Length: 81
Image (cartoon, rainbow, N blue to C red; front, side, top):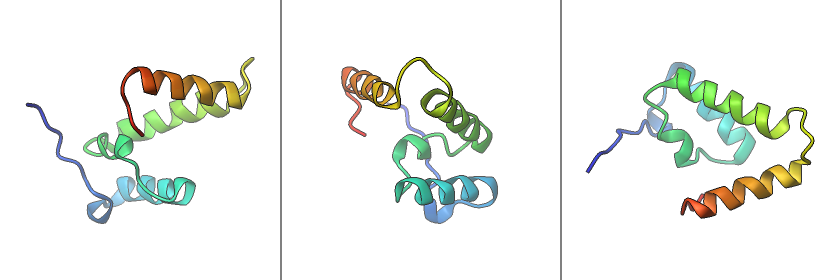
């Protein structure tokens, strides 16, 4: 079985600490979907920027429709976050 060594919030330093602090400010905690990307803070930062562009940027879909699509896809993939 494969595994990824996560950098937990209490262990984070530098850029990763900044990203985790922003996550706590935004969502009240650091979800595991972010922690799984913790070995590469640059990739995590890029992933968050992509998320923000897709969910908050200009789109013919409303924010509600985008959130609904995210929930449907997560559920289809058996993601429980």
